Amino acid sequence: MIELYGWSDALQLAFEPHARAGYVPARVIVQQREADLVVTDVGTLSARLSGRLRHEAREAGHPAAGDWVAVSAKAGEGTATIHAVLPRRTAFVRRAADSVQTLQVIAANIDVVFVVTSMNADLNPRRLERFLAAAWQSGARPVVVLTKADLCEEPERQAAEIATLAVGCPVVVVSARQGQGLRGLMDHIRPGETCVLIGSSGVGKSTLVNALVGEERMATQDIRAADARGRHTTSHRQLILLPGGGLLLDTPGIREVGLIDADEGLGTVFDDIEQLARNCRFRDCGHTTEPGCAVRDALNAGLLEADRWAHFQKLSRELAALDLAKDRAAQVVERRRQAGLQRAYRSTKRDLRDPDS
Ligand code: GDP
Ligand code: ZN
Image 1: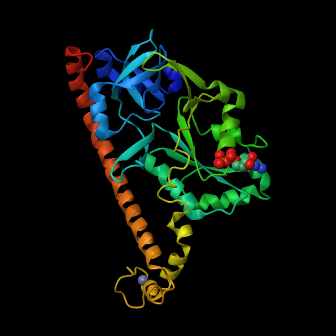
Image 2: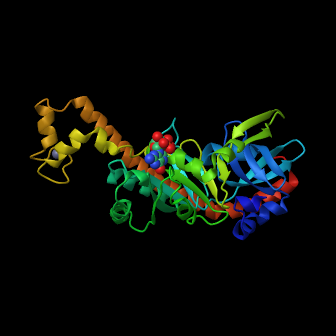
Image 3: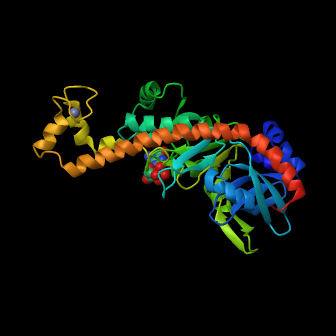
């Protein structure tokens, strides 16, 4: 069963200390506030964090959809306890809604990121760059998907143009409406590999998901599992098995990842300010005391509102901080990966003494 979800020899190796502790491997297919749903060899179970993991989660964050975890299963009751999260190969990280510092993993162990953009709309290269940057940052392989080929006169020419923006990424042309290019898209995921779709609203992601998964299958992907109190609940599966043997992870928030720090870039919202800044004498003008600063001139002349300027500066600072935070988060992830095995060994000993801690 878990082989279908991408269980591998490498994971088996990482899991050994947990196996010795009597735990079984599971993958998170739905991440929820109360209890996650995990898939195991004994079925889909409703899983809660162990006391110790809950404590750790305050700092390290909750397991995310796509995570591999070590659980003790009560198959008869349909429940499980999560004791450890296996080191992640890749992760999408974003700032938690309620905090500047806390970073949240929204999807883990993604192999391929389909960066979706449509052929009919005017392409925004900066936005594409942002999505690509988010994809690279996750550690997964990006593939650019150009949708709505049926609305484009010369799809191949446009694909070639985009290939020059997306250096190092394959570019795939599809039309979900005509069922064209879907096979070629699936060729980019091997059996057991997990993909996500990211991109702006309206480019055709939902349509593509439906075409890949099949509409009826989509409906049957709702799962019933016992929650921690033994009630049966229905949840929408976030990790979906694809007919070709790959997996699609479609969690809330993943599709627009990269928009948070980009959106239409500050650029679209603050286009006027970017225009102004281009007229500053110095290219790297800090808009404070530099001579020939077009931004200060506009402020002094009342052509640029002070509030708007302050807002722009604040957002710029936040974006810079976010980039820094992401770099730091990547370091933390790596350190944890290193520390993970050691800790797993230590906790193995502890758990053998006290299985419910
Ligand atoms: P999302 O916001 O990225 O999930 O985009 P949707 O899947 O909701 O699609 C947005 C619109 O584009 C809908 O009206 C779709 O019917 C349309 N659309 C999606 N794929 C195609 C396609 O391949 N060809 C054409 N002509 N329209 C499409
Ligand atoms: Zn300036």
